[in-house]
Length: 190
Length: 201
Image 1 (spheres, rainbow over the protein chains, first blue to last red):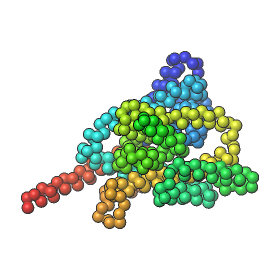
Image 2 (cartoon, helix red, strand yellow):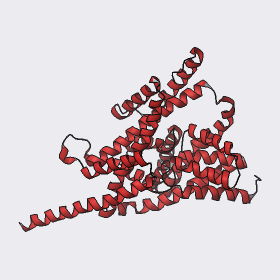
Image 3 (cartoon, rainbow over the protein chains, first blue to last red):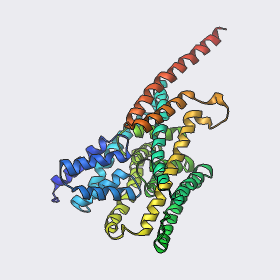
Image 4 (cartoon, chains in turn brown, orange):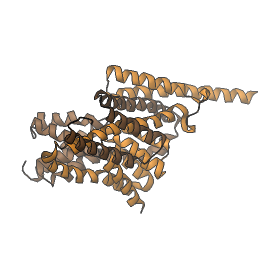
């Protein structure tokens, strides 16, 4: 893409509308991005998009932001990154600013409280659904080590209340070390 | 100072949430509820609910909400910037490294380890909210009378529908919100009725 103001605006508005209409967060935005950038505008090739998704998933942080960084960089170079990120971040920033202004007044309203209490039970179902799907994939590998890591991480977090950052760093390093060892020994423990 | 603390807390959230979407959830709880005490568990549960109902990533929503609550619009901007900055740095580097090292056994091993961890941590955060939903802010007790059975039934029904039919989660939220309004408000009227009768005696 040529680096002219019109293309920067196109990138910004594409990201803005994707972000403004992606309900439920997380992986919902991936198929929408593919539809927009591969099928509708043909700014990206199909396998470029697949690589972008894989990279966005393997990096820490917000998946939608990661993907928009990669799309922005691919289309307009480094200067495309802030434009794409601004487009992705602005809709939730605006919407949540408005909601938090009214939150104190709404929260104590009996009807709003009842709706939110009901929704909390629904949100729990959504969270457990995601955790079961993710955990199921780990169990299906039938490798004892990842399953042990999962069980250990849960106990360390929920029962022992260890700082999450240590748990994450420990499990990531453990995986890296075992991965290196596997390479030498020819086993597949992770 | 408060801006910097907000920035730093969300920088950590952005830096350490692997696995997309809900992966930020346990970190937000740990940084904002458990360590800083900026949000109560009930407010955290409300943010999660509102985030699932509104467009946009949950970490950005939480950053805006918590930032506004603690330090106004400037706080929201500081928190959001903190949340996004690690991604900008890491993803740009990663894009550059990806093609060279994507088959590295250390990277593959680390990612497998992190994915297993993410599942466990999301489960743990879900459990915190579930306890709040079932037992209220008093926390878990064995005493059956303090359990909110309306919430238990809605949770079980929601999870069953999600596992069985894989609908868009938004429908589960809308449904449970609607049911919540009906069930809890009826309880309210019962409560008012009892108080009223008490006064008459």
